[in-house]
Image 1 (cartoon, helix red, strand yellow):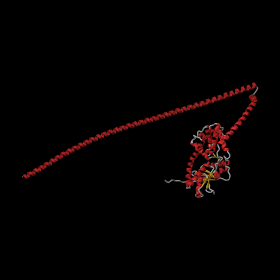
Image 2 (cartoon, one colour; image 1 turned 180 degrees about the vertical axis):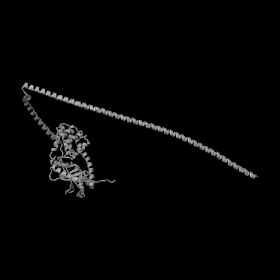
Image 3 (cartoon, one colour; image 1 turned 90 degrees about the vertical axis):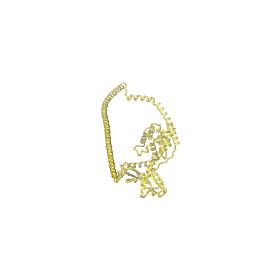
Length: 516
């Protein structure tokens, strides 16, 4: 029985425990459900709040953008309006200006008509005055019984009779005294000048000899099938004479600058040992650039020797180019320095400006440096150069008058002309035949240079051959034959020359690329 009650109590206890657990779990579940519901309601409220705030910000941003766009549109409209106003104002001003020009043109026409009328009136008045003068003169002649010419002759005859003997005697005495004094002073001045300055005479030749280390070098200079010597002659314009002379090559050209550049190129090739067309062209390009520095050196040396300062660098270069020009075989730079020294000495003896005399003497033949590049005589070119580089009026006049083309306006100009004559007239200073020869070669080259499509022209073989290099992109093979025939015809019709002249037209096309 007790066992039964115990089991019963145990079952009842278990049932109560289970019921209590179920009640407690149900309570907890209701509590959790309510909390979750509460959290969901709070989340909804927060979401609504964020949504309202976002909408509010969007509205504010939209309003701000709208205001900015309206303001920008307003500013653009204002700018357009201002631009339109300016254009309208400019158009208005142009209309006013046009109207003003029309009025001015009308005024000028009226003034011109007025001047024309006044001119006619003046001419009429002058005619009346001349008529009155003629009437008065006729009346005077009628009263005096003498014409105007007879009266003038009568007065002049009486004056001449009274003064002729006295004037003649006085003039003759003064002329004799002046001639004796002038001749004496002039001879003394020239003697002193020549004594104080004496320079060696050296004529420029038309050939240059280049010494070779051995005779084998001749073959290397000629090259395979003559390609090296042809390249040298083509790019330098100098004729290479390779004869039986041992260990020597002769460079022949009337142009000293070409001959000098060819000499330096050939000597450098000999030292370098690499002799082929490409190397020849590279060295010639380098020598061409170096020659400008050498020309500047010649110019600066001449200025230093004479003590001349403040010379434009461009003019110094032109002075240096005189080293490679000749006048009747006389080196132009050496001649100019001689003239400068002689003019300076004579200026010192006379108490004139020595520095100015030297400057004028050095520049008197400056036009010869570029007279083969520019049309005109060396005097005209020299005057233009002196004006371009702002030389003084005394220097300009000395250049213009040293050959008597223009009247000398100062003592300096006269001294330069005298010094020029002294330098040129010294025994052996000049060679007329050489100068004529050089002029003939220059004329020969200029004939071909005038042809269209010609790039370079070289007179070689002492003028017996003319080599014409044409531009391949402008002249075809048939055009080369036509140029050769035209040059030949022009030489025959315009020049006088001994023997024959061979015209060779060279057309060379090169294709060159550089691999990188």
